Amino acid sequence: MEISRDHPRYRSLIVRERMSELVRQGVVAPTGLIAHGRGEAFDYMLGERTTETAAEAERAAAAFLLEAKRPVITINGNAAGLCGEGLLSLARAVPAKVEVNLFHRSPERVEKVIAYLEGLGGKDILGREQGSKLEGIASDRAMCCTEGIYSADVVLIPLEDGDRAAALERAGKTVLAIDLNPLSRTAAGSRVAVVDELTRAVPNIERAVRELRDRRDERKRLIMEFDNAENLRRSREEMCRALR
Ligand code: ATP
Ligand code: MG
View 1 (tube, protein in one colour):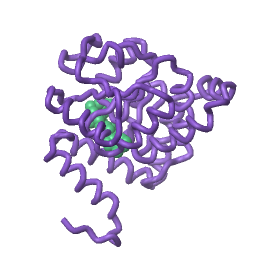
View 2 (cartoon, helix red, strand yellow; view 1 turned 90 degrees about the vertical axis):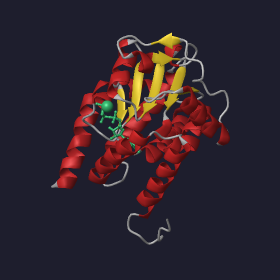
View 3 (spheres, helix red, strand yellow; view 1 turned 60 degrees about the vertical axis):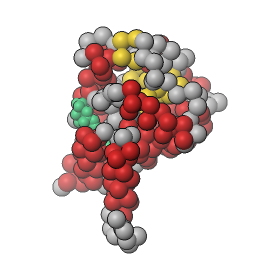
View 4 (cartoon, protein in one colour; view 1 turned 135 degrees about the vertical axis):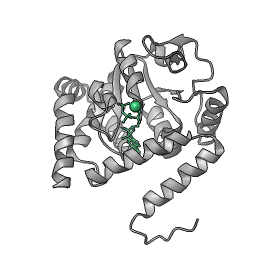
């Protein structure tokens, strides 16, 4: 479809076209489009910008990633399609391992998402062999890589489902989420929930990683002071203000 550049929702339409093409290629799950739509609705209420509240969460997330011993970034089909390059770049900057972990998992789709990320320059991407299990969730979604999520201390989960986010918490991981829905179980259960659109959040976190790399005291302060419940309350407040 031809989309005119001066259409007021040009960017949104381009992203939708790309996501539906990735459904045809099998990288994005059909239901991933629904999750994307929910994200768009929340972003609309946020004014499609990074709020000061989100920027604070992004700096805290960067601090946690830098302080981690074994940080892992998980990538699903939506995250790969929306922001694959950005997530790979963030993983190199930290550095963190990357694991492909799908809600609708099949070996074929895992292969497609990994191949897609490799096409963007990704190396050593985990997810083909998942030899470990997280407790307390349905078996197909419990599987993870022994040397990836299973042994991670800090996990960044862009666009994750609430059940799995809770399972990661129970397994003792520090969970950092990127999720435009400040009411989701994922956001509420995380140590840091970044309420911002993925393609804005990821470069912001990478910038903060670079800025905080040699500032250990500042990282410690950010980690100590970050209050997720309060940050989410402010995000909800910003949305209410926009609606009023
Ligand atoms: P939960 O399962 O955590 O209670 P949920 O059912 O709303 O919440 P899912 O549908 O499992 O969540 O996952 C999709 C989530 O990802 C939604 O909360 C949606 O707002 C968010 N999301 C979708 N697209 C984006 C995006 N581009 N950037 C950030 N967040 C997004
Ligand atoms: Mg859910």
